[in-house]
Length: 132
Image 1 (tube, rainbow, N blue to C red):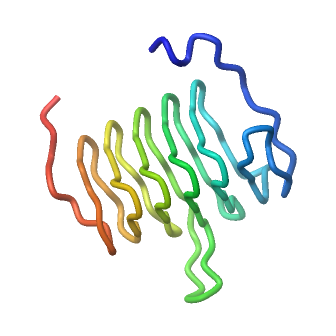
Image 2 (image 1 turned 90 degrees about the horizontal axis):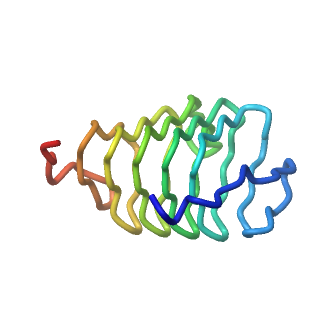
C-alpha cells in the first residue's frame, strides 16, 4: 500500500484537534492500529472503547460514538482491519464493522456489519457480501 509507506503514528491529545483536524475524546480508551487514515473533522468518542485496526480508512466528517446521550446506549466500537467508512457516516455504540467491509458515505450505522460486506443507508443495511 504505497499511500502508507511514510505513515507515522499520529500525536493525539485528548479533546484537541490533531494536525489533520480530527479529534478524540477519552483518548485512553482508543486503540489505533497501524497505517490508518482518518479524515478531517472526524470525531471519536472513546469513553467506552474504540478499537480501530490496521489499514482502516475513515472519511472526513465521520462521528464514532461509544456512548449515546440520547438513548443511553454504551459499548465499544470496533472497526476491523482494512475497513473503509465513507465521509459523513455515524457509527453508534456497540457496533463492529467487519474486516474488509465498506460503509457508504452518509450512513447511519446502528448495527454491526459483517466481514467482507458493503453497507450503506439510514440505517445502514448490508447490500452485498464480497467473496474474498
